[in-house]
Image (tube, rainbow, N blue to C red; front, side, top):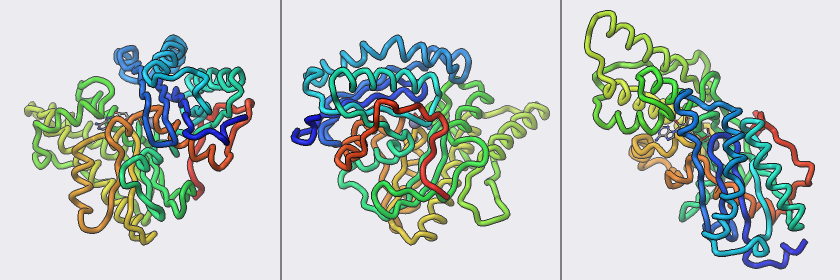
Length: 343
Ligand code: KG4
Ligand code: ZN
C-alpha cells in the first residue's frame, strides 16, 4: 500500500451507526473537503424513535449516491483517496453493517488501508478539531442519544472510564421528555428551541442524588419528575407551560453535567475538558458550562454540526490511527456494544 509516501493524505470516512448516513473526505485529519449527511429523521418521526430495520434500509438506499456526491464536492476521484475509515461500533447492528460492507468493498477493490473507528472515540476526537486544540491530560464527556460517559485521558487516545449512565443516555432523556410534552422527535433540538420562551424557575425539578460519590449519571428520576409534575398539574386543572417545563428540564441537565465535570476535574487535577455528542450541540448547555467554568477550566466543544453524528470525526480520527499504523483487516466486524476505556 502506497499511503506512507502520500502527502497530503486524503481519508474518506463513512458513518452509519444510527440514523444518519454520513460521508466525509478529510485531508491530514484537519482540512474538510466534503461533509455530507443524509438524515433519516423524517422516516422515524412517526414512530417517535428509531426503527432499526428502517434505518438499515435507508442507509442502503442512499450510501452509494452519497459517496459519489462526496467525491464531487471534494473535487477528487476514488484514485485520490488514500484510506477508507468506517465506524464499526457502537450502534445498531444492521446500520453498522451497511457502512462496514461498503468500506470493505472499497478498501479491497482500491487496495487501500481500512481503518475501523470507535464512534465514541470519534465524538470525543471532534473536540480536537477546534483551534487551538486541547492537550491532555484532560477529562472527556460524551453526551449523545445512546451514550453518556465521562472519561479521563492521561495521554492522547488513552481512556479511563470514570462514569457512565445507570439508565437513560442524556439525549434519550431529552427525546423521552419531548415525547411526554408532545413535541416530536428528535427531542433535543425542539426542547432547546421551546425552552428559550420558558422560565426555568417557575417549575422546580429535582437533581439526582447518589448515596456514594460516584461519577455515574442518572436521568430517569428527572424524567419521571417531569411526568409526575405534568400529571399533578393536569389533576389540579392547572395550566401546563410546556415552555417552562422544557426550560426547567434543560437547566437541570446542565447542572448535572456541571456537577460531574467539577467532580472529575478535581479528582484528576486537570484544567481541560472536551465534550462531544449530539447534546453538546445545545447552545444553552454550551453557554451555561462556559460561564460556570469561566475562570477555572478550559472547555472545548466542537461546532454544533460536528457534535451530532457526522463522518468528519471518523475520517479525522482515522488519520491519526493510520499514522500509528492502526489498520484493520478485511475481517473487521461490527461491534454494536463497543465501549470506551476501562474502569
Ligand atoms: O450524537 P448523536 O447525533 O447520535 C448518537 O450517537 O446518539 O446524538 C443524538 C441525540 C438525540 O437524542 C438528540 O435529541 C440529541 O442528541 N440532541 C440534542 C440537541 N441536538 C441533538 N439534545 C439537546 N439539545 C440539542 N440541541
Ligand atoms: Zn453519535
